[in-house]
Length: 207
Length: 197
Image 1 (cartoon, rainbow over the protein chains, first blue to last red):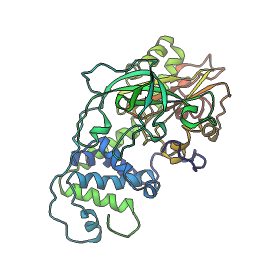
Image 2: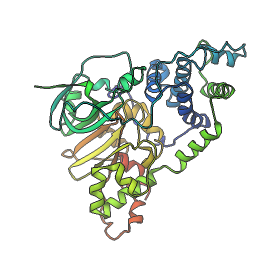
Image 3: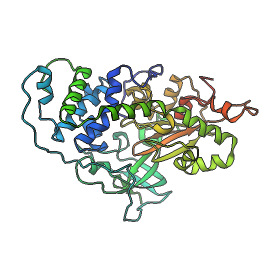
Image 4: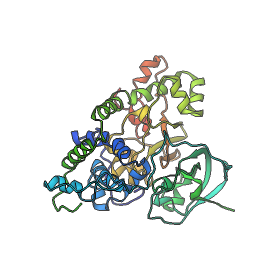
């Protein structure tokens, strides 16, 4: 939601980690839900992103609670509607078959890669203009924008595939520097810049 | 979800928890142990130790800026979300501020869990587009000729700001200095010593 307009002041005094006990409970369930569903962090994030926009804005842990159900149903742990049946006191469904496509991850997200890095520090690059309905870590505000590689950060699990059961596909990651005016136009601060971590698949060389 | 009832997360979480327990897929003791660990052992006191050390020890400062993960491990600090910790230094010419516009990525091992405002749509939407106005929400003014760098944590790299050492602290000990390093100064929305000191 970077750059989305219409939001007011940052609630700087809303300083707590958890407002209510159920938010702490949600924090605690995030990993067990992923493990139970044989899912992974990228698939969980994609489930959060698929929460409809109005519901997404209800609250941070509200959307987690919705995403847990998505992950558990897609992982075959819960049948579709099983949670509602539980809440309305109906008979539980028969045990569902596993349907998950996401694959559990190992520890951390850094992985050895087997290809040389395509870019080096100082290279001019442009981010892809392509939109995806799947998971990606290229923010919408930074599509089709020109920047300069500021650091080469090693090879990592590619969220775009890992969220969809298409493997970890270790991919080079770069810190890319974008002038604020490239992202937001001439009204942005002349001395402001944004650094983004961009996977190699998001980048094209600028010649 | 087919019900037309208002969404009640606390009720749904209870139901999810009980279903997972019945299916033998949840160990509540382990959940509680992990929650206890991430809410008590992790926190800004860890990042503050690294910052204070960097202020008094130029060699440590160099190592912290070169490889944040290795440098905080020197101090016995490790844990979730610092697989690759990058420390960015505030100077008279550069002011750094950290966000995750896509979700809520945050360097847990050095700062603990993020505060609610860090996860708010207001912060996530605005700080990349109008960082100076957001800094003003925190009472932080940055001179027009200072470069504001916004670090959007879009992958698994995590960022920690090394704030400027407050003026007039030359005689303070390392532990006294650590007490000046507030959490917000390591996110980059305030300066060290500005609050909580």
